[in-house]
Image 1 (cartoon, rainbow, N blue to C red):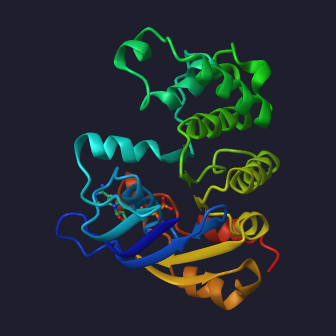
Image 2 (image 1 turned 90 degrees about the vertical axis):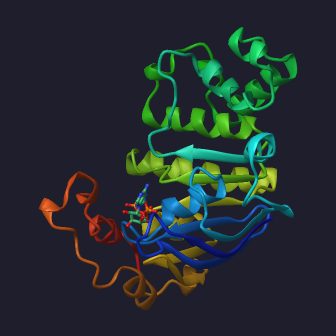
Length: 272
Ligand SMILES: Nc1ncnc2c1ncn2[C@@H]1O[C@H](COP(=O)(O)OP(=O)(O)OP(=O)(O)O)[C@@H](O)[C@H]1O
């Protein structure tokens, strides 16, 4: 179980981008985090795996406090947090199997990692998981020879190789076509239930969030303003989360050019 309470994140002296967030996610439940660009979705996931330092608050994973962990204790805790990325984050020149085994890096010695002498049990686990997601026949192919959907399956298996207690997915379908996106969402949904794993998915596509997750959390300006089932996610909830948020001006700089209203465009597919 993941328990977040009163989580605050402030970058420098700016206004906090996460404002006293509270969220509890039980094992095997899949939660979508939605919100306009800049709402704080990525920051929240990154606070959980401590890629970003929370300013205050508490994040507990199966009872263990993650905030304030340092050194070896932080490394051990991070093994329990699997992460799936929008851009897959694979090493292109390595094979699928090598990428998958990278999920064990937190468990093996430096010598084993450098010489790629992973324990037999790890290799067997890798094959079992690759078979489960349909990529075992690509084990010896280079990662860059795979399609986007196949690459994301490699990313999912690599995360599962960590034997995680929670899986975080940051826009896992944003680089994929609609059909492949649906397959990946279905895969995350079924893995959560097979492995009793809580899964948090940052996602811009509200239609997919409603179709493939049982709970939707809506952020706006760093505050949680919606927490409910897809059936509860009415037009009013959609407007509360996205309403009145304008796309940034073109001259605001590279980082701000991602249009907030891209979410609006995607929402037009939404069968509300
Ligand atoms: N390293 C950083 N330093 C300063 N500000 C940051 C940093 N990372 C994010 N921010 C700011 O924090 C706010 C929340 O950003 P975040 O990336 O968490 O939002 P998001 O909801 O994930 O957006 P998107 O959907 O575009 O990825 C934004 O205003 C962003 O500019």
